Image 1 (cartoon, rainbow, N blue to C red):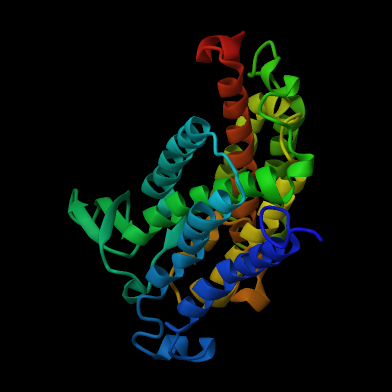
Image 2 (tube, helix red, strand yellow):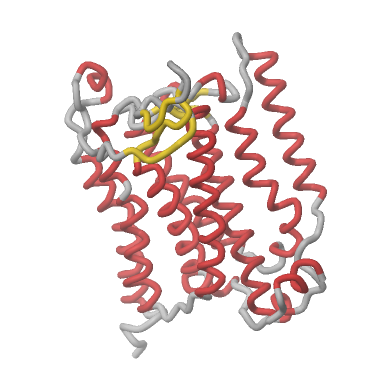
Length: 332
């Protein structure tokens, strides 16, 4: 008679599936309790979703806790802690920098009551608050909700933990072992990947052409420009090293999970209840009417971030698995 418990057993697999569903369902349910009125009436009510943005961070926090406390220990998954730490140590500050330098160009925060109303520094005026004024009427240092910084930190951690768990357990049959020659045998990790560069140029060209021919008052597609640089910039020098060791099935499922959460988050809640809004003149100009005018970039951001996170992690993991110094591993 087959074992009914332990990794790989039917009962364990069923409980794992139930927990994966709960990772979305529970935080989503808790977030939805913060909504007081339907979307159509949100603009006419003073505080339609009190602390909605704050509570919605559970959509990232709950999966992090579930994976760290239950899935990874019970499934016998071993995390490469140094690779994990270095990856988050690079990506989290990059996310903070995006908020600090570009939030005033791309975003607005018109509903502060959906947050704890704790300001965190950001250049320019985001509509959330001002920390330091320069010359009269000119904002040098504005602010964003502290939730923004927590959002980026927990987002990167969620993506990476989800990919690691899928790679090491749920889709382990397609994983490249840490001791495999594909990981440890290489001349150098930094290699030019022309296709990534050409893809980036093509995407930016398409964005500029669309604005020129189809947008009545074209601006500058700044947000998609930043997203292309975020996704395909690292790929231009890291993709050849990451290609043979990425678990592409794990990446695709992680991407599906993250995009599902983001659509629930933005299309259902953030956009209708003004937790944050987008500066239209910085967007390509494709807005989805059924999702409260959500710009195309709101979906692309999570595709870009997931792709970038996994590539960076797998390259760093190859470096650490090889035992080489950073200079020798990356430059040869």
